[in-house]
Image: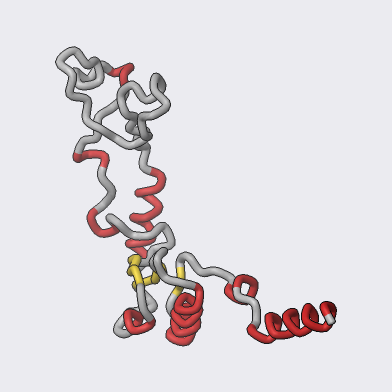
Length: 147
């Protein structure tokens, strides 16, 4: 485990250039995602030093920690509470899928706490979901005011 934490620190310290798409500063519509320069006269394709580096195999992170979360856990995407079965809390952390609603998210978060799993994108559900009793009280007050 200590070796893995050391490798994660090495990965974050790694002096890697920001790979910028050619012409990004010229057009607003160009997304800030890497696209290989393909023009015949492109200075970046011809690897002029001032035009930005191209991604190469040497810039990669160590294979033992590739794709890991910076906290040192392996990310597992979860859609239902049943997906939590068989996960190792020492090595894996969960990320609840974005398509999961608040009710099921609450079930997943409470089950993950019971199992000792770390939730990478946990939300404060007590603040988001009002109690059903609050709705009933508000409706009764409105009816009384109208009479």
